[in-house]
Image (cartoon, rainbow, N blue to C red; front, side, top):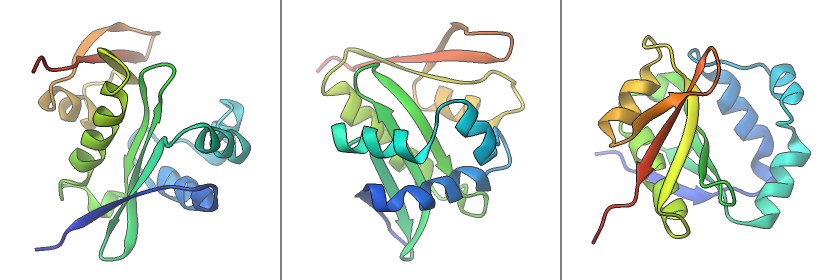
Amino acid sequence: MMTTILRLASPSDIELLFDIRTSVTQNHLSREQMHELGITADALSDAMRKAPCVWIAEWQQQAVGFVMVDHDEAELFALFVRPQHEGKGIGQILLQQAEAALFQRHEVIHLITDGDEAIRANGFYRRCGWNVTGAVDARDVRFEKRRARS
């Protein structure tokens, strides 16, 4: 059985993160579109220096996905897996890492994604215990998850 290894990303991984992010087919953004949204190499580097916030999943020594959180906003900011590695449980491992990091500081965490039901991420988040709490705009929806009571 192949195992997925998670490691903390560093600023030297930024090109790799952009490569993974632009490899996806659903919810695709080009580097230019990300740049217009303020998602730049400098912004990612600054976030990584502030706090551990990005983890990379490696499968067979290859980077196949990543997750990024915003600790201050209690937000799962990004979770992407290369299309050829979908269905291997990598997204779930990344999601668990993000949830653990965010629940250390917050009772309720959230994410915003494309609300189109054809987008597979919506079903994935629901299966993992997230609930849609409303529309953000004409396209995007907000999901929330509450920390489990122990």
